Image (cartoon, rainbow, N blue to C red):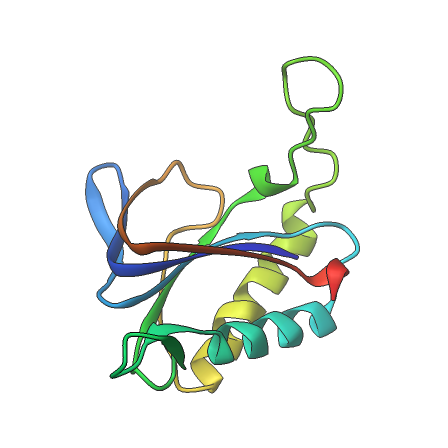
Length: 148
């Protein structure tokens, strides 16, 4: 799994001009899933995101976690995170998992965050979505579970 995590002061996702998910302070997570991902990848990523300390404490240092600020997550499925551009100019997406693999893992990821007490808003898997966010910092972190 590959996640692009952005610290946000607010974020929302719309489908056909209707907002279907929105959060205030927290993380906007773009989540890519590949063929080799398993429940272990889900558990690892949930744990890392829950405990990632990138929110400022009283001294202005990035020392607080999502949980400690009572933040939320906007979770967006993003198969293009596995786009390969080594040859030519048109990306290949063959490393992205098909929906039969990706949907259950995406749902498990969201449920895993919820089980940790984190509020989760989502888009719709496979839909044409418009994502709006205010990246706070900016702070952007990339986590790939294959690089742990």
